[in-house]
Image (tube, rainbow, N blue to C red; front, top):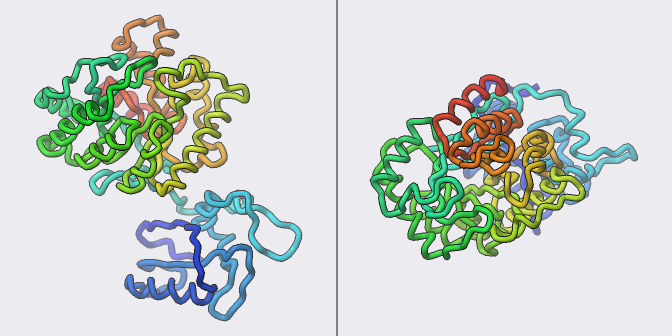
Length: 411
């Protein structure tokens, strides 16, 4: 039996390389525990840190001090769950022919009580995202475009008018936004790139002003909407917490290593090509859900290879990017299936349907700013499908939509 009356704790599994033999490795881990003040007062109860060796390649090791594989790992949901994210299709090194994968062992366990929930940290002042918590609230991300040519609000917010930007941000926060997404270059289909220097000149003063001159913004998160590493680094130095990259690192090879180095969370969005070419890259012969899942999985692997921690990643299926109306609708309809695809489990998801072209096609509303009601339907569908963040222009209206949708679906 495990002690349940204890504070919440973080549990994870890491895959590491070592030259140490098993007992030497155990000594090293126990030394770390001692240095961090561990005191084991209750068997299977709370402690400040607990480092266990689960596996050592595929070796079986037995000693009075240590057994590998770990004796209890196949009965512990909180161990098997993160282990199955690392090596879902591998088999524990156990005697006998009736072997099952780690993911199969996990599925065979009874529902745990309490249920472990995933954690994605954003900043010290912003609550972590818990994508597997069925009662979580949906975050509203307000769009602050400092561009003259964005598809629905270009030119509304001049990057040099800091007073107007401050007023806009205050209104966003008062209307329910918890994240402000700052962008300095349009990524609408066919848009023209502006260059890193111009993009930095647009976004950095605004981010600094939000962080230093708007007390109401102290506990909100700021994301920088860019695919350039230099812009992301400058924006985060100015106060941004999240890098929101529409290309998931494909348009700038320095983006993922930069995000890893500065230690920020990142939104990896699915897109093909560039904003100039993506409208011709919308063929999904195997189906939009499996192909988007596979391509996002490849970007997750690239991010991890670059040094970005798995718990720092947020996913975005990229509504309207290299997709036509039927694809956008299928993603909204099948979001639970996409979230459950192998390799995509337990990540937080952002959905960005706001004022998109497919809404205009369906409703006949040509002016993007007038697509509020159609956007409301897609935001509600996003919440029902499991989105953690919705990126929107009409903050007050969509906050109300998320509140009601949360009350219906997040129970």
